[in-house]
Image (cartoon, rainbow, N blue to C red; front, side, top):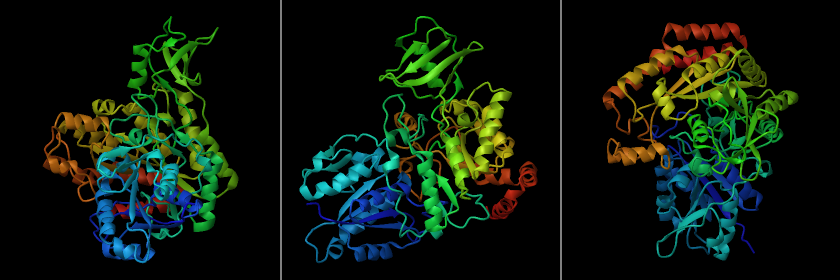
Length: 568
């Protein structure tokens, strides 16, 4: 018989040190999913989010709950905080487990850092949950009682001799609608602060996930390592139904008075397919055969995922090809148009979500991360493409879309190409303009300090940033995360500024970490001034005034943002 346990989940953040803090505070959505399935299984559950809570006070709260198991989640930036709290728990085991038969408090960790640096993490925690964790954690909690730990897929640990053990990857959950909504009870939702500009009428805020994983293989991103996928093949994206997503939004509004949500999906605007031009003449002799190296390279150049075992077939009597996976399912359809190949797959996930939201009239605003080529897919767009993009953006805005963030990364074409974004700077500029015109606030994200960075590329990026029609700009120092192509490059070419710069935590995130053709002091000066230079420019101030004039419903939000800019 499985014993009911007391499970405490902790997100260790800044403690009492304000310097160890993220800009925004949001619920640890992955941990909330894990807590929900554990509670549904019959265990007693509590979540603590350590925001402005001194470590001593946190420890008192842990001792008061007297857990059997403490579960952590961590990204690389707050991993060191998690190890510190886990260490304190082990030191205070006698107090925590007073009057209990068990001799130890078990510590478990999951999340991005635990998944990408698993072997090292097993030195600091009893068990590591790798990748998607709902099923693994339930089996692990059961196996702790019967001792059959080796049978649990998707975990890692050290055996009695100190040897590293990984039980193998677990299959992904393709039925996300079957999961309970994330458990938020007990969290102080009043402290949650989204990325500004915040809607002026926001009462309460929460975050959601409508999908998991990402189709793309950007060389700086850990999504592939987190969610699986091998080689250059696609990482499967799992999706919740639009109805299930809106059900959760309605639940949040009814239970917590939430009227603004942020989607944490890496590519929310993914519409079950995409359109792009690969610029390759139709060739004979490829039907019912493996794709040619040339065709595969065209897909790779556009950063389009393609299964290694994919084959191509010609549809009889038509100038169309079908790209099939190993099971025979169609991945892409290719048509010959103007001497180039345009691939497309029909998809209306986002449209269905927007219409479901409009139908229920929830009055809940939402924001998300988008991709430039989801909004305007074809590299050589025409008036019809622009019209389709405008229709999509207008539908999103009418359903409550407040912000779309876009990863621009750099204004230097060479750096953008190295990052395999599959987009052009002209297209990026156009999509941001269309987004602004639709009444949605564009937020753009840039990296600085990549290995290819030069003084010229920094100036090119600044000039480009001044030109694009965004409302919010976020410049961040580049850091090569574990298990990314950029990390391999930095390690192999010995590009770290020092051994200390390999560490990436909340105390050291705002610094240059790798060598490039720019002196660290010059890069620091650039970072200190770039956003202020943009926000104080006449062009930017005129843009805000024009946006208010054309979209008066956003007036209070933008005036609130203007006041915030004074303090930035």
